[in-house]
Image (tube, rainbow, N blue to C red; front, side):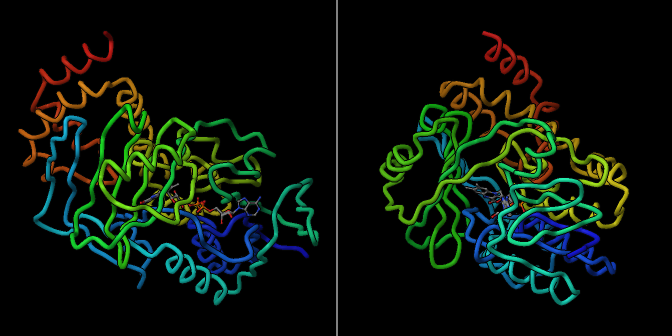
Length: 354
Ligand SMILES: Cc1cc2nc3c(=O)[nH]c(=O)nc-3n(C[C@H](O)[C@H](O)[C@H](O)COP(=O)(O)OP(=O)(O)OC[C@H]3O[C@@H](n4cnc5c(N)ncnc54)[C@H](O)[C@@H]3O)c2cc1C
């Protein structure tokens, strides 16, 4: 079968770009290795921008702020005055997009794992010929591997479910011994809370059990996942990557839904000019993602004592954080924070270099 565009992976990026391109009249096929769409673990915490990019009925909770827990048990409340973020039912969100893509004529082949691509042809249960190929096959992208799009790092993550939380605040747990280089989270969703953690260690089961004891909650149905850290090449000739496959993820928080949607829209608007896709994405969000990588590099160097030291500054700057805080564009608040607290920067540099 011959298609204008073959899309590998029916996640956030794949469904979104399939819809956008099918709407423009391209003959599109989406190949997904799973028997059903969805099923990936994800906090589903997104900003208003996501809802604006993709109208949805999949919102299950509105988030008014966050409690940040530090290693010395200090707890700081950020926000509280308005809705800062939303929690979505990720599978429902995906089905909505897939249905829209199909309604525009996109063809879906599930249970189709892409392993071999050669000369504009995907070899599988049936051979698919394409003019353009889009890799939206997640963090460990086979498309990226086959076309040598660059190596990236990963954060190991695990998430399960806990008892329903009667609050509309996310809880973030910072502890560089328990969660080396990342953090733990509790997100109040609908009937359940989503409880998870990311870290450099591969002993995720052990970690989640310790975390469950620390927060005194039962965590069940947990599953592991990978968060990409670093960006790959976005395109090559008639091939482009979007979403986790391209490493379009906030290295500070692991959030990638906004970037996946934004990149899909930009690619479709400029299709098939992939150079322009890269340029516009980098201007709008890629530069920010690079800064997140820098912030993560700094975070990795911090010990628990340093985190406790930072807590004191955060406590004194809650107003500033509430004013400039933005879960997508975190550089803004970091910049304002440092402008107001130049001594903090000096101490931070000293701690990193020591
Ligand atoms: C534990 C965890 C929590 C997270 N929490 C949040 C959060 O709260 N907010 C947020 O914004 N982001 C979060 N993320 C990140 C977010 O889930 C991803 O950034 C987002 O799902 C990326 O979408 P994607 O379409 O690029 O990739 P994916 O959603 O991973 O989709 C890739 C698809 O490709 C398919 N596939 C893979 N290989 C092949 C192949 N060879 N052939 C065919 N199909 C294939 C997969 O089955 C999958 O369906 C979290 C991630 C993790 C791991």
